[in-house]
Length: 123
Image (cartoon, rainbow, N blue to C red; front, side, top):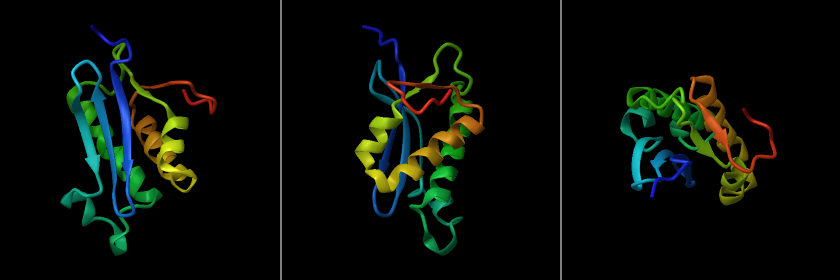
């Protein structure tokens, strides 16, 4: 069975780290990932602040670059599906700016995002 909404963005946030994954729903495989837990990213943040909106934006930028390597940045009919409202609900209101920072960084770096059940109007 082939899933029409093949690629999906999933975010994981803790008190210390932010991780963004793009998952292939057909086989459950992670296509690309970026996290503030990575040594290369962790050392770039000032004062070790790896779980704020700036760090979330960096995670989005790095994920966008990795998606370009995989050939998934411009959609090619296969955009990345994201349910922003679900991600905000899952992470809690305090993390809303971090969720939007990741999403906006992906959009700003040329990743084609397809909103699911969206009431906020991203394109």
